[in-house]
Image (cartoon, rainbow, N blue to C red; front, side, top):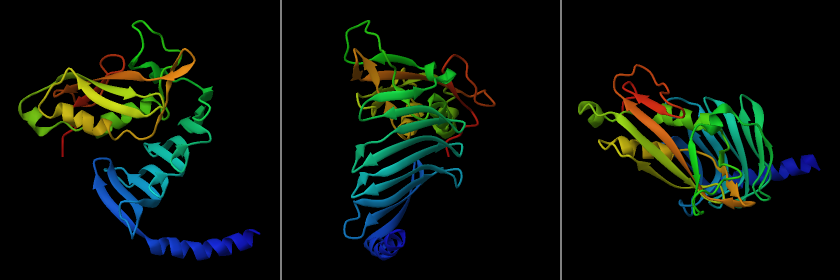
Length: 260
């Protein structure tokens, strides 16, 4: 049976490749490589990969079927696997897994909303989280959890945000707050800036925030999935020689993180 299946696949693959075209695009996320139908270049079908802008390493690897996410999607940070998600015809399915240093730290069933394994890391509580659409003083039973871990968020922001030339020229520095809204299904529904600084700093943070790959385990309250808001403090500092945290959860972008 296996040999018959292999023969069938050999005949199918050339047909599939004959119907698709490989596309390579440079984006703020890095180099994106994927396939589209020759008959309709708006429809992605086949493998999908994003490569880091500063090297050949893959940051996202997945698959599209008729422009819908399908099969296994993997996410990497510093060339290490941090999360795996599964889709079927655009719908979330199977068990999603988060990793820390190669070990499973999280297992989540998005269909049943069942968090069967969760080993919290110190950085998982580094950001301020508040419920949305609930009465004042409402308490979350479960905070939204980034599948790849908060360390991945901090790493991606710190390594991709560049200090805009305008802000450097005007000697502009200071602190702002990046706010992410996570909806009831664990998707990032919105992101905006509190305490804006201007001079291109706010827009640069939003540019990178919208690059954050992967999904979240949604927050819970009253036994139901709820939306929540996450505040991430970011400081821009011209006299710093390297990134460092000043206060709990704060990400520091220093002078050498120059906008290219």
